[in-house]
Image 1 (spheres, helix red, strand yellow):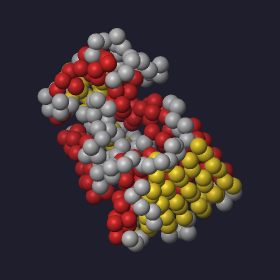
Image 2 (tube, one colour; image 1 turned 30 degrees about the vertical axis):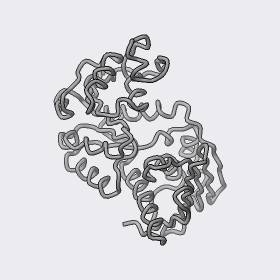
Image 3 (cartoon, one colour; image 1 turned 90 degrees about the vertical axis):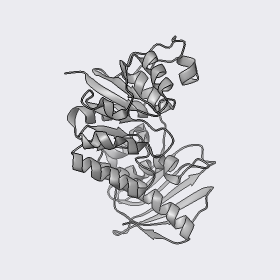
Image 4 (cartoon, helix red, strand yellow; image 1 turned 135 degrees about the vertical axis):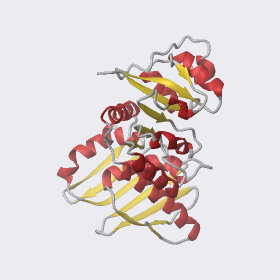
Length: 303
């Protein structure tokens, strides 16, 4: 099996990019730049993924790219993201906290490269749809999701859900972040909610406020869901009532990011997403509709 050549685009001073780079590449925790880039003592992940490494990197601040390249033995720092095209097999766009990092994906999608856009896929449902359509036009395999899909609890629910029957009522609670768009951090608990409920949301009504969102979600087949997002919520909890039983889970994040990265690399190798991009589109649609509902003071029908 040939070694995958991966390009990394932006977000280099944030944890997701650093975790990806140190998991895929050799890294030197004693490097004099480590503390400056990572802001903490050097720790090399014990989980590794063979025959896949970051070979090209770009950031809008060149010194950040140079520093990460030195620490993680990334061979090439490029001047422009599109300079990677023809030299890499796939592209990672880590979260850079801007919610618009997905806009950098365009040239790679046009070139048909397998692409992973870290959460959130885009800053609005309209922009998310544009990105997905561009990927389809370029025949580029595309994936975007939260690592909470890969917690032990989420994987357990997906494994045993056929035995539980059809979902009837799902309630999911998770943290929000002050000053951020709802979908930036809300995407995590919404991903958990989707694992329980599945797709098909029809109407969303946020009956809460900006410090405690309470999303009431309705479906054409009678299913009902609730997502609560609070700035004071310490973790992630979900409860599902199904036709053959119920399940309540407390999400723990151990190894979830690594499992997600394994699936991303599988996408890069097979060119087939393990999680359909439509799942992320519906998550963003729900959260965008919730923001619209809160502003308007009434339910919003999903298009």
